[in-house]
Length: 315
Image (cartoon, rainbow, N blue to C red; front, side):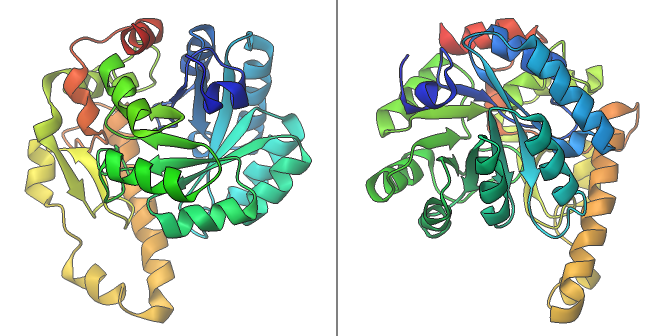
């Protein structure tokens, strides 16, 4: 399957194993590379810069022909680790960086100096044109079927809008759980796809068996949007706990978010609290089950090795 994405990253199949907070790790990405696709890990999955540096070295040693690896950077002010993470990634090297939730200008400038490609998450044409003008190598088109922080447009509408107005490759993110879904995105004009949620239920994922089993037991109809994690609407599995706490921000958060001076700090606090709650739910036995996932868990029927999930996507 030759597309602009396979040519950009020298991979066999036009698939990126999407970066997922707490879920993605080097074991998953190594299996992704062996399967002929690209793998990506959020830099925030590592508590320290030294841990991030060790992970990069491990992936470089394990890299095989036909596969590639990269890291995701949250590039807004709420991520105080951003600049240090960017520096380490550029020093050690990788194939690509995916930027999210902010301006990628500095990342693009520094990464290109180090020979690293930069793909940028976008949800609309306005931001897509901005990152193209900044020199992004490709666009990650985050549609309304994506897991985590998603967009508002359907895959078809977003892909066609970006393909008709941008010159760089468009990678569709959201709504892909099987080969037929990939073929559909390619038919709309996508140069590749980013797939996340189906890999949560992989043997290699660093989350609890309960989280993985939830991706088996629940389906697309069980995915809801919540404002209670990062301050930005995010998709989660509608567990009894999520139903109990609700999905809307509190009245106090709503009032404070309208205050220009306090908004940034409120968002940073909410981000910190939400990420901690998500971490506990994903890595510990707890009744507070805030499990992030997207509608593509509809295709998850078993907890499988990463290599078998890739086979389901390409066969």
